[in-house]
Structures are given as structure tokens and as C-alpha cells.
Image 1 (cartoon, rainbow, N blue to C red):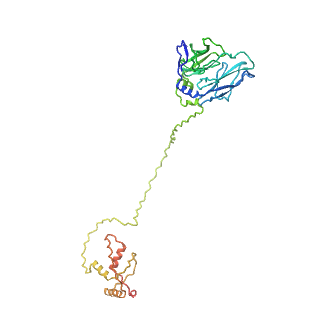
Image 2: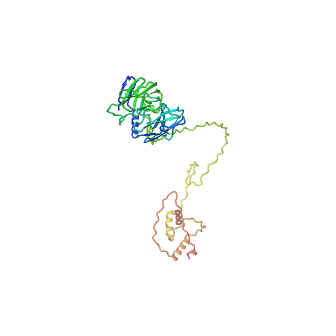
Image 3: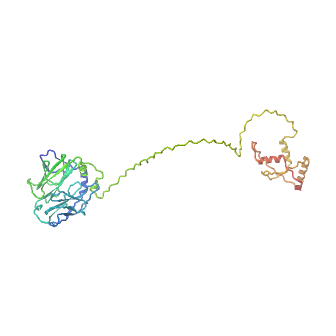
Length: 426
């Protein structure tokens, strides 16, 4: 919402909208209504030391410092001294070498980018004495108190947040909107350009020049007359350094910062980023060449190749032999082998036992005349009649290069039958 302000001689300073990131983070903190109280020093207490220890208590606001260095905190101001920040209420703040006399302490809750909470109870003040009482630094209780908050020190953006706190001033319940005329007004002057503010809200200004700038705030009544009090008229020096890259300046510039939500949420956890590890190649050791000595050649004895123990098939080598004249053999009157086979088979006794395949070395049998063989065979057949059974003719084996031992044995038995001795026949 726009501010109710009238500008006087504004030449270089202008009001701008809050940066989008700050608007988004503000919505997270709007649910809090912090309540701040001062534990020590107590009101009207006389201290016996020039060192002042300040402790505070905070309710309804998480006070912490994030890993980025920002977070909700409590601002502590002693008179016109420089502001100190508390990020842990359990840790007190120390002010050293405080002058003797009366002093006023002011504390209030603040957002990470130095914007004060403006609800009732977010501010507290107390007056105490160091060694003795005096009349200085004592605020009037019937007059509002103006506290300048920001900007202070060195900034890295030409856009700054102008923020202040009002105590004991009639403020509309909404703090921002009011149809009735305000009973007070704030006059702000930036490098000589002045304008008035009639409502209480943070103001973003743009147009600071590089180097030193000065800002002055004055508390006025409804007519425009100053209302003097402890700090109702105060000025600060602000240095603008474009090279400054602090987180708060980056927020004011409108930058989007990763993991920025951790400055408003203490339960926010940053997920670790695991970067791939590059495997560096192992250093290669330089290998020095080894001198090679020449080796004398040794004569190799040729060993004749062994012939195989068994060789079923051996290639025949053709040898050119001298021609041999074959002489014709005289004709033989013997009958052909096949006819003799048939005659001798018919004369043999038929037996059911098959001849054994195993060859037996039998002693040579003296050949007898054919007539005696026939008589012996006839005698055996007369004494031992054998019933003849039809014998199936076994299939003749195929004539080939190789025949089984059995076939050759059968052929030999058929060709040369074995004679039976007379003793066995009896």
C-alpha cells in the first residue's frame, strides 16, 4: 500500500515497492506477535559499575541466526549509542565504559532485514542509573518517543529501507490505514530532500548516491511543529558502496537467493549438495629402458617326429616299381569256393550254439582222407539223432573292406569243419 507522504523538493529520492522476495518472506513472519521484556537492568536501578549487562526475554518469536548470517533478532539501543543485536536471548549484551548518570535502554523485535515488528508489546524501554542519578537521557512520559532503526552504516544498494519505531504515540489499530487525520507526522530528509510521512509503515527509498549520504527524522505534531523529546530529532550517516555484496543488500536489490527461507524459519534444513567427484588419473611413472644384452644363438637339435602308435587309415604312397610280367597260372581243377560251401554245410551237423567270437589257438589237426571223414560223420549221425529244426537263414553281411571277426570265423567253420574224435562220439 502506498504511504501517505508529501514530498518537498524531492529531486533524486523516490519511493519504490518492496522487493518481491522480502514481500514473500514477510508473509511467513506476519503470524508472529512478539512480546519483549527487559530482565536487566531493572527500572530505576542504580548500578555500581560502568559496565552494563543487558538481558531480555522474548515470547512468540523464534530468535536465531541462520547459516546465512541473518535471522530474527532483538535490537538493543542505549541512549544514542550504536545498536547491538541479540540472536540468542540466553546470551546477554555488554556495554562497557558507560558514563555515570541516568540512561535509557530501548529494545524491540526485528526481522532479518532490519524491519521492526510494530505490534503492541514488541517494544520495551527502561531507565536506570550508573553510580548516580542525573537529569540527562530521561524521556518525557507524556510525549511520543521516536527511535531511528535503519538504514545505518554501509549499504551495497541504492535502494534502502527507511524504518523507525514509535512509542507512546496514538497509532490507528490497523497501523497502516486511517481515514481520520493523523495527530502526528514524521518529516524525513535525505541529502536535503524532505518529505512527510503520516502513517507508520516501512518505506523503501531509491536514489542514494555513491559515497556518504545523510538521513534525518523529526517527530512533528498534526500542524507540523516539532515535539521535542529524547530522540525525536535524530540524524544518521549512510554510506553507499556499490561493491558491497552482503546478503541484506542483495535482498534490497531484488535478487533471488537460494535457500533464503532459512533466515525466517529456524526449522528449515539445507539439503547438502553432493558434487560428483572427479577421479584424477594416477600419475604414470616413467619407466627407464633396461639395456638388453645380446644372447648367443644355440643350435637346435631336430628331433624326428614320432609315428602314431595306431593308424587305422594310412595314405598309400605310390611307388614307381619296375614292371613285372605276370605269368599265367595253370588252371586248377578244384571246384569254385561257393559250391564247396554248400556241399560241406549240408554234411555238417546242425547245432543251436553259436560259435564264440574269441579265437582260440588250437593245435594243428592232421588232415584225414575225405572218405574217413565221411564215415566218422555218418557214425555220429547214426548214434545221436538230432531233431532238425528249420533254420532261418541269417542275412548275409555286406561285403566290404572290413568284416567282423565273427563273420570271418563263421566263414572259416563253414569252409573247414572241425572233426569230432571218436572218443567224444562214444
